[in-house]
Amino acid sequence: MPRPNRFTNVLRIGPVQVGTHYDGRGRTKHVAACTAPGCDFSADYHGRAAAELAARTHRCNP
Ligand SMILES: [Zn+2]
Image 1 (cartoon, protein in one colour):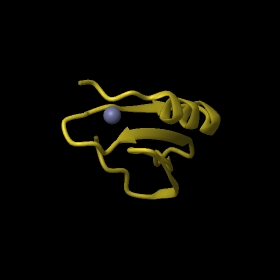
Image 2 (cartoon, rainbow, N blue to C red; image 1 turned 90 degrees about the horizontal axis):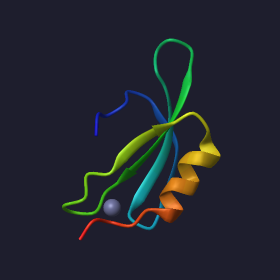
Image 3 (cartoon, rainbow, N blue to C red; image 1 turned 90 degrees about the vertical axis):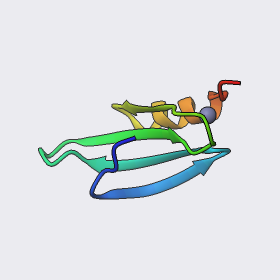
Image 4 (tube, rainbow, N blue to C red; image 1 turned 30 degrees about the horizontal axis):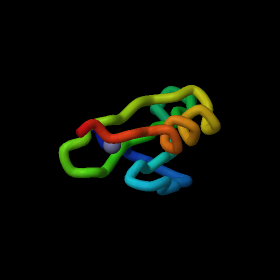
């Protein structure tokens, strides 16, 4: 995943990290990214709750 410059409020749920960052244009984005080896899941969400839900429901690909 692309590394945001300012990544705050990092939360780990299982292998998935949820973080909040600013995109440099005054907007807040919420990212869920899986850290498990071989799993390249990562996605941006408009809301923190959506990102955390995605992290909780994520299942790594076999
Ligand atoms: Zn995964």
